[in-house]
Amino acid sequence: MKKIFLSLFLPLLLVSCGEPTPIVPQISKNIESAVFGAPSSKVQLTVFADYECPACIYFEKTIGEELYKNYVKTNKITITYKNFPLTQHQNAERDALAALYALSQGKYWEFNLEMYALEDQKKGDKVTDKERVALGKKVGLDPIEMQKSLDEGWYLNQIAREKREGEAMGLQGTPSVYLNGNIMKFSSKEEFFGIIDAVLKM
Image (cartoon, rainbow, N blue to C red):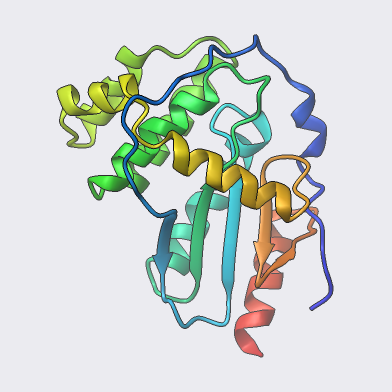
């Protein structure tokens, strides 16, 4: 399949917020990227995203949730989620840290939905750790350990690795979706799922 480029959501990427305060990791813990679905599927998707990015929020609401329900949970495809927090988004890196903690506890998808919903409500306003931990508690995470993971930056190195992967692949914005190593281009939900279905039928 020739290389294809995601363009539907790029105009939304112009939204910007204040510069984030860098987090210095005190303790680094190892974790792999979030992977779900059937490992041997013909369709291997990789999604690079930023929780605060308006285009990512839109993608998740219009495509991501249906994709997970109808294609991932039914083992039709494999999907890998990678973090690519943009520097202009004040919440994105800590959101990603929280999501990776949720992944370490087997609650990634549940937390992922809650995190996007909160960022959708915030519209670029600051998200506090108290709010992130409240979301974690809602999906069954230990609030004390979760706060510790944020304070100590347990998974900052994994976020950095995922960003480097995206940069090496030429990623220029979020969300960026790769299908079997090729970046996707589509202009509607129907076109997106049409591409997926066509590959599954090959």
